[in-house]
Length: 168
Image 1 (tube, one colour):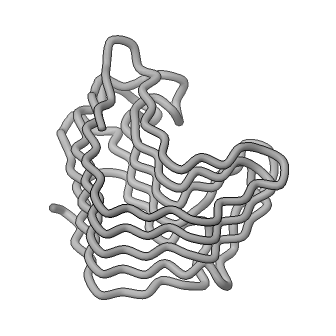
Image 2 (cartoon, rainbow, N blue to C red):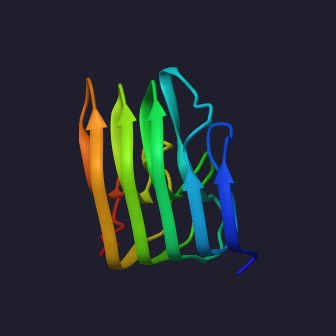
């Protein structure tokens, strides 16, 4: 992996606690505490805890182990606790292999959509992207997702790129 983080508590952050725009990521024993965080707001806005995007032509892996995300409160259009996306503003983007083990997501509140865990291609760029997404989830707990004006989604696996697939 290009980025390996272990044994951290992240709090009082701006928009996302972790934003990785290319390359593989491994997270171990991480707590993301949304108390004190400042989130984006208004039309088209999105914020959350962990975001990984792969706009490159190289395969990446995203491995999340023993991670606790909690107490995110926002007034943003879309809130994501964890979002792993391929595509980006340029194609092609290669495959994403995503694993999550011992992941807890709890107490997310937003006026817009709340998505605790999302993976896929083409979502942030109107369908551009060339890769497939494979997600393997084990021992994942999701609790207390609240949207006051939109949907609350536990797990979303999406592919908007033509002739590509997402597998969980």
